[in-house]
Length: 314
Image 1 (tube, helix red, strand yellow):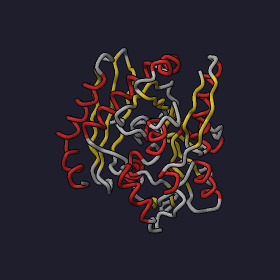
Image 2: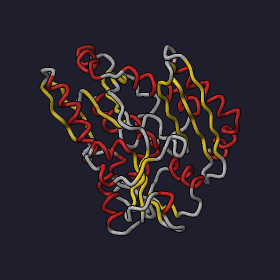
Image 3: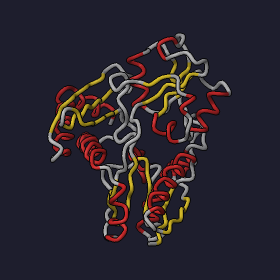
Image 4: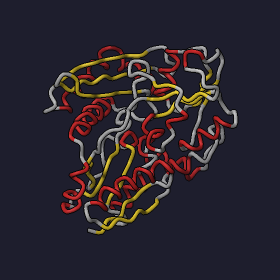
């Protein structure tokens, strides 16, 4: 079977696309990768303080912050210019465009966040006032709870770009997703790992999403062997929680699900933008209905005060 994979052109995106290519090639398929530039890629070329061109600002409005890195790739799928897309699952909106399905979720990498320090000092020993780079509201709010004495600065760009900014002294440390650092063979940069209690990850963090057209049964059969049922169930619970809360990248929402003692356990967080309030909820449920577990944790969060936070952000 001849398959065209649509992918962003970043180093990490191409690693992910090539991993899928390798799996499908080993199964006897002919694979090509088509690089597609997304609105998110264009956005990263602008410093955070620089006003965005009207065309990019409009694209962001059309895509929504959760779809910045996938809108153009999904359009290529729907137009038949690509057959399969490989995304970081945390970038994938909880509601897919009509005509597309999430066909497979491969085994998850480490879902934690990591601390990368230029000096090699662990997070706890970073001096007061040290600059820590991250553009993630989710990370910023939780970091403020852990170390309100640090200066958090916006840090856009791909993983290699952020590491270069750290090396040239734009900040003293970075907070990054462990999965990307691991996949690119950059573990040597990691100073330490945050526990899930310290910083709860983004929905779907560490997992890949393989997206195809809903009516391509042959391709669906081809990618099914790449699916990891445990990972797929976990991210279904996480995404159900996020869907019920109606959040995206502009809202500090975090979640992580995993199997413990034979049950699927989901923890969720909603935080205020300034980090002054952080609502937590945890529940366990049957693997047979991960969506109900996600919805239940979302309801606990809303009843615990998340509804006020989300309303104030809107």
